[in-house]
Amino acid sequence: QHYMQQQKGKATPQMKEKCRRARRKPALLKQTHSYWWNEQQTQQKAGKDEDRNSGKRNHNWIPTHLWHAKRFHVSSPPIFSWSVPLVHSNRGSRASLRLATSQTIPKCTIQDASWEIDGCAIVLRASQINSSSSSGEQAVKVLLAILGKVTDVKLSDNAITSGQLSVEGLIHEIDSYPAGLVGPGTFIFKPINDGSTKREACLLSIFVHPTIRLKVMSIVTTFINSHDGDSDINLTISTEPYSLLRVRGTSSTTTVTDVFSFNWMDVLPLDVNANEVDHGTLLMIKVHCVSSTDCTQSRNQIILKSHRPNHHHSHLPQNTACSGWDVLCHPSICNDLFQMLVRNGGTCAIGLVEDARAQLEAFPPLPIFPRDYPDSEEGQSYWEGSSKDWKLIRSCIEGSCGRNNRLLRMRQRESCDGMISADEPETSELVSSCGVSSRNILRIHWSRLVSPTSGQSVIVVRGSFGVPFLQLLHGRGRLPHKVVSDNTTQRRRPRRPVRSSNLAVHAPPLSKDERERHSQLCQQLKASLSLPALLRCGVFFEGKGSPSVGDVIYSFTPRDDGNNDDSPKGLHQESPLGLVIASGFSPTRGRSYGVAFVSAAMFIDVLDGTDHGMIKDKKMFLEVAVANR
Image (cartoon, rainbow, N blue to C red; front, side, top):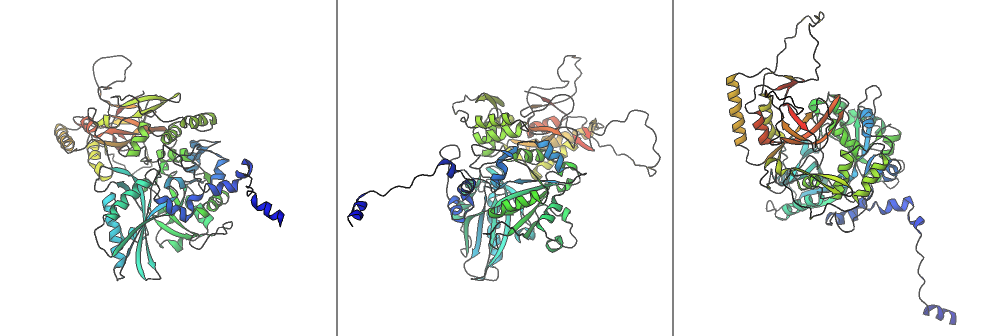
């Protein structure tokens, strides 16, 4: 008894802290960095706002992080609180592109893009308080009203609201279209029926980039709080954990069928081919994961989303590497599905750099956020170099980080050294460079391309608004109409060498009356431009030279001044027409190809008064000159 009294008087001994080796076991690290797919903590994540550029940030792992860490260059420190697989450590983007487009040995690629949707979906639930026969229709109408206020999506198909098709669109500030762009998003409807109350409801899942998720939630919450419509409709907002796997390539459909073991006849109509389904088609598939013992019935169901953005040009080999299927699943089974596709399906894993290269290879090139969205806040931050995360992504996408491990590690170290100083002196130049960590960062001010004197924000022309500009371009000349002979077996030997079909030729000039009518159309379209606008276009490079990001585009018109200097013929350097934002050699095209932004007003001025255009592949083109910086 005396001994026990002495022990009570002593302080309680503290447990010895575990050593670093014990703390860094892979299982413990995975549990520490995978909190984001816990439902309770995911709900708290919805209302948590953090500054990505200051303070302590979360460090999230994608479900397949341990697999990628041994084979890929993974971002360190994390990008937007995520460890992102950047590029394979033993091959470059051209190898994966060659594999995805191969016809002799059909294969496909796979990418774990869970970080690009921030590991969750913004879920809007619309349900009616008092049950009625039309409660489901009223809930859908309320969700459509929200989309009409904050997006450019125009829904008229019943297949979308019934959950058979997904839709993609741009998210804007409330009632500010076309200005106030936030970023792109994917929208999926899901009608549900509450069995306990027997009331119909509708769910709207929104998938956005992690840099704009908090802002999108704030916009939607503001609209819900100010909703003064039908009081019988109850609107709630939450988040739901999701993982995204992208399967792309020639054999993507065959691989998904063999690995998941399902019959297309059970999920598609009889008259629909699995290789010809529409873009955005949604299919519910039930899978069986052997190693996932904690998976419930609902977690074993995955969503297959068809991804064929350029379905009008699906026959071209350029679009093979960016066409396939998206697998939306719960993060707890993502690693098992990934391993099944890699081991059993023979897919080739890719990272951020390879995916960006495949989207550039497509025809027309697919937009990448925020590089192709300079009219958004994140797009301005991307091009002005005000974020160290975007600085690292730009270094990987614009550079050639194949097998050069030292170059990529150096860029990762430089990304940790702080951002561009806020005290950087303002310049009136369109393109400027400033030194950051012993290397130059290219800064592009897009507002100075369309309005050099004023700092007014720009608007990018998209969708059907670009049709008048295409009509003006095709009206620059006449397309030749070749008469094909019925007797194609006998072909006469040409007297002159046949020009290659890849070369552009001058179109027959317009008549005087046609030129006047074309000039009037140009003046009318320019007068209708009420906002400074940019046009996104593709660029085919001919001749010598290696194009790069930031190259300046000038108008190119023939001149007869008798000057024999080495300057490009017809190069007008008074005012630039646009800038190149991405470029590279295209294996399927056999030449360099890129993406550029040009000023809409100056584009019209160049087309006004021209006599002829350039014809290539039975299409009209505008000939320009590109000057390296």
